Image 1 (cartoon, rainbow, N blue to C red):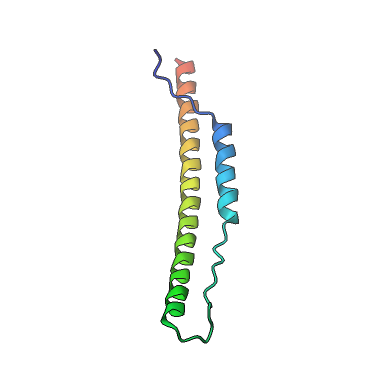
Image 2 (image 1 turned 180 degrees about the horizontal axis):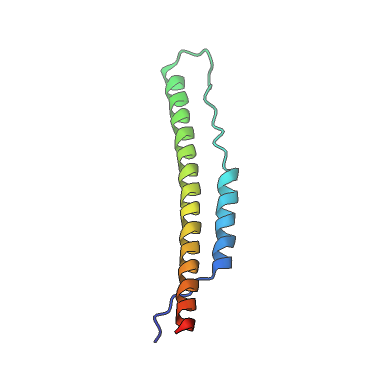
Length: 92
């Protein structure tokens, strides 16, 4: 029974690229002017909720992009460490 961890870097990169492309295409285009000029409290509350939702989607998008970048850096760090360890083993 082996305790080896295998990282398929090309598969990870491929999936991270899909995540980034999908996240980049996420556009929070929620109407914020429903009932323009209307004085109903419901309309004002709906506009407020839409604005909050738009901000939340934008924050989520930024979080996804940050996680994608950190994952990419982690995978690269593991690959670099693996190459370094491999070269040290070969030298001995």
